[in-house]
Length: 142
Image (cartoon, rainbow, N blue to C red; front, top):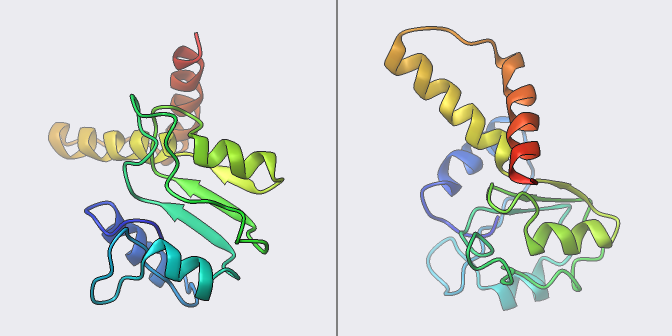
């Protein structure tokens, strides 16, 4: 998992609750429980999934990518919590390598859904998240 800010905490919790094996937190500087990008490439190049929870690659800095994917030869999936742009450079580079990808738009829509439910004391079916995400994605691509 890239980054250890506010978004990383619920992602880490979700991974733990779903039985993820070892989870490695990566950041630009070493801290307790965190390794650097260089250490991750050297010691954890066998990871299955990389999740970017950092803001690197977010609009307007869309040319940035948080990590070089070259060392990660077993990578099966790349996930980015960023919703703008829809496909970050990180995700584009993963897709071009044949790696399965997922962006952050669904998470953003789900957060909005739960906020509306809370503030308006109403229920919205989870099944509405995907169609709303598709509609927003279409609008963003115009």
